[in-house]
Length: 171
Image (tube, rainbow, N blue to C red; front, side):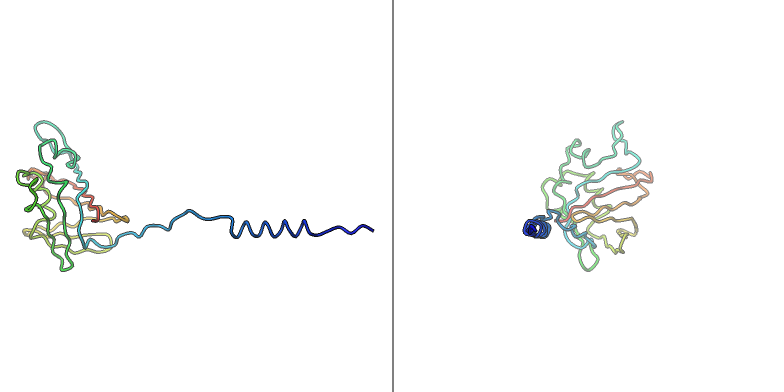
């Protein structure tokens, strides 16, 4: 009788076990942590409106792109701070680019002015300034907050109900 060696079968089994245990390395990184609060410093990275704001016969929906065309670069330097005590501050008064930026100041201060206070729940934020209270939805990612609210006026202050979408990036 011939004796058959079990060595190749055992070796194959051990090799397969080794490769499945140590041979595969996952390159999948864990999901980033999603932000949960507005508290802290934020850069305004995008502001869009609906309906379009008509300026000199041109309809504008993306204020972030339009303001530089009007000679206003202040928005790129604007930082908004949501303080733990419920107050909001911005740095427009200290930025040279904001000296002659009336549209930017009006838009930023409508939401994030020096007398604005805020409160928030998991999916909403309420901003109060000058006797006006605005509640809007907020959605967080790992680095941004998107706030959507309707104001009774457009960027020029005209009585046109306008939906503003503001994207903030955490600093």
